[in-house]
Length: 556
Image 1 (cartoon, rainbow, N blue to C red):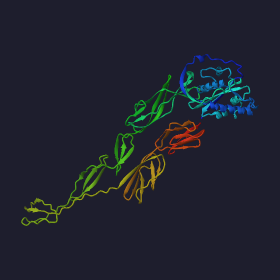
Image 2: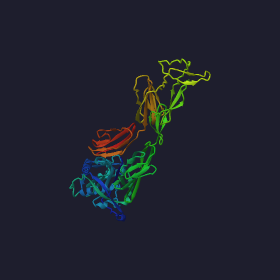
Image 3: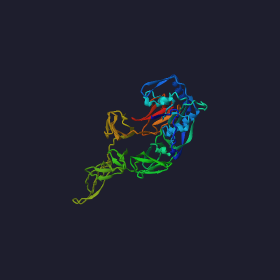
Image 4: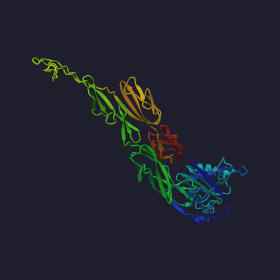
């Protein structure tokens, strides 16, 4: 958490203040911004400071020795100095210095002003700002703020506290004159939209928040996040969000942008790409690259024979995206059967071209039985007959033959019973598989670089697709594991919220996100929703399979 402090003291205004001429010529830019006033906390700081003065304390002198202040009188509270301090609190957000952003000296604000302390930071309340200014552990050179608060010549003070874009800005303005209007105004505690007139000489440029564009499949569309731009300052402590003209730009190689929608080109495969966020405001421009993850949509595929089945493989990215049983054609006779040997019928898979064969039974032999033409032998009544006439050149007479027909049996090819289960695994975590049948199981893996297996216990070694097979009782069970590298991104890593208020953190992940709070007494979290319990700071941790993102939470 970044914090800044600074002090300035003028000894009873004995020197005149020079008013730089360029302050009149400095070109300004009007910017609307949200400001929260916290003047009730100012009263708390006033009491702490006066109690401290009344009790008596010390400060280092220039020679390094300690000087005892003794009991000091309370500082009266001056409404005019409070108004000046609130103005200065807004100014130090733009220029953190004892000088006004337009170049004028701060003493030009009032002839009552004799000294000033300034401080700023995220989540800085009255107690922390007061402690920063006390400088207990600093040497003489580092105790300017302390000496201002303990200055015996000072009679009155005004304090300002505003919060701009999450940064608390504190100012103490001191005077050697007693207050003429002590505590006549009500403490201001409201949030308003104000127009700040900012000298362009203080503007460093336009900035754009960091973005992760998102994930998209090739050929699909993605709604892009809103681009938020802010003015940055050369010596300020915060930035000011502005309503800039914004747009997203894409390389034509990967797609195009229409409004707030990205349209990915088809057939991109898996790749990491970038989009560019652009913004323009008041003559200032800014651009910021945003990471984009493109996943292949597998528009073109082919099949690869794996024996009992075939894999479906993407032509574009080469990824195996599934497997299927073969789809066989009607088959062709590639070898004719004869009486002496079997024939062969070959089937071809319509998808991958794999082949299988089956035997065609031998043809039945025909047995000839000669008879005389005058007394032919009748065919056996119990048998079907095949009768044929043939010319016998040696006997020169007609004979008939008879044979009992044989059934031509088509043999059944044995097929192993197979089934498969698909599972996605995020991260390198071990899993246990169980075969659906009891018996002696033989386990094997298709890729030991991705996973090994022993007795059903699978150890993940890398990322990719692996097949784990369990063979039992003549059956084969295939487990297809798609092991993916865990990915986790969140839209905020710093959160400030009030007690009792909640804020939803958006997470992008390829797995289930686990949310935990390091201190549930300060803030709790459920499914990314953070709720402030009491004032303080803690860390919310989002995790997916070992990948952790920490979110700093401050509860006011």
